[in-house]
Amino acid sequence: ASMVLNYPEMREGFPEAGLQGLEFSLKNDSDPVTKLSTVMCLGELGGADDLTKSKGNQRAVEILLQGLKQTEDVGLAVTILGSLKNIGMRGAKEQVLPGIKAAVDAMKDLEGGEYIVQMAQAHVTLLETGKGRSDGLANIV
Image 1 (cartoon, rainbow, N blue to C red):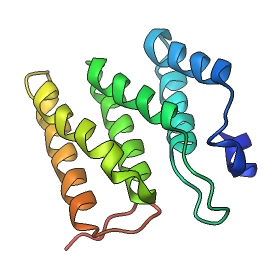
Image 2 (image 1 turned 180 degrees about the vertical axis):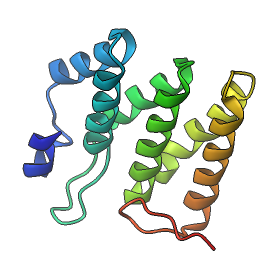
Image 3 (image 1 turned 30 degrees about the horizontal axis):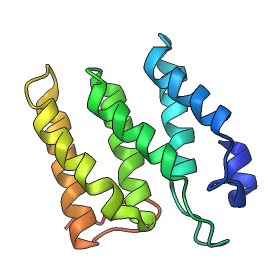
């Protein structure tokens, strides 16, 4: 993630081998800290950079959306939702909104799913209304 922060122009053309490693980690690593770090890295890769006008990495967003669909881990789902919301706030809301909306249906029956549903619904409202700052902090009204 620090490489992408320091060299934002690398977002869009990030090596596929690196993305495959991140995807493998998200799906298979048993260490929750590694998974959360992976989500944060994918979130940085997926989001556009306003200063350099670098586009976000489409594949990173796809990996996050797939991870959200497949996880039953509430903490991981919350982290993925936050990353997707931040990506959406940085100009890719059309790309992330369908996946966030789908999470509402997919997660509602899980233990802890009510929390995920409420968070997903709040993120959808935020992205659809545009009320919030691009750094991902919502204006609570």
